[in-house]
Image (cartoon, rainbow, N blue to C red):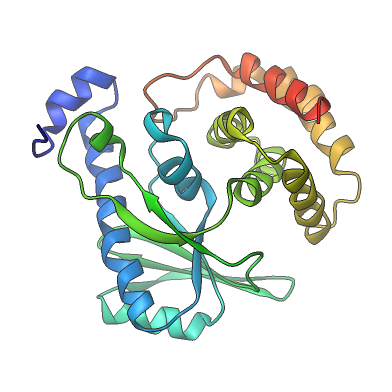
Amino acid sequence: MLNEPNFDEAAIRIGIASDRLREGLRTHEVMGVLFPALEVAGLEVGLYGGTALNKIYFGKRQRLSYDIDIYCVSLPGVVKAIRSLGGEQVAGVKEKFGRNERRRLRLRGVDIDLWEAKMPEKPAKLQAVDLLQYLGYLVQPVVVPSFSLEYLLANKTIAMADRNELKDIYDTWMGLSLIRDKRKYRRYLRAVSRERGIEDYEGYIDYQISDVMLRNLGYYEKRRIDVTEVPTTERMLREIADALAAM
């Protein structure tokens, strides 16, 4: 039987602080308001990034993700739609990346990063599920437009190499354990790398893992991700390197 979320009880059960569980659920609830409104407005968008990977593909092993990353064909249209819901522009966050423009808005306390860009593939309607639902609590799943695991994971793999963040290491490690179409993943990995000016993506990722991340494991001890169970950073990095070498 499903029950309304009891955050204190859930925190004890899974070892994630109750305030973080509340924050994660708020992100999920904002998605449930945002994407239907964008669909009604006829706007072509696609959820990507860590929230997409975790809520759509990682199931019970998802980590909590607290922002919403969206590709959109019409940035002004999406900005207008979010503002009609009560969203506000976050000052100082506006940048160009090649032909793409990024803006950040905030809706009900949740940051929404928008990239105006050509869609890498046609978004599919996929079900996003909050971690609390897997614990037996009453949380409504949300249908969102998003992308294949292969495309999302290719972006995350390059982000891992660029940023050296524990959350990106975890997402890449988890995603590689689920990947089925390795050719499609490699194709997207090459494409994403070229977009960022990286010609030898294999050498770049190998260098970042072996000469940067594995040599600085102490850095990650101070970092936190909200997930029910996470292996050591060293194990994840070595398994990522092995998985990529085997492709």
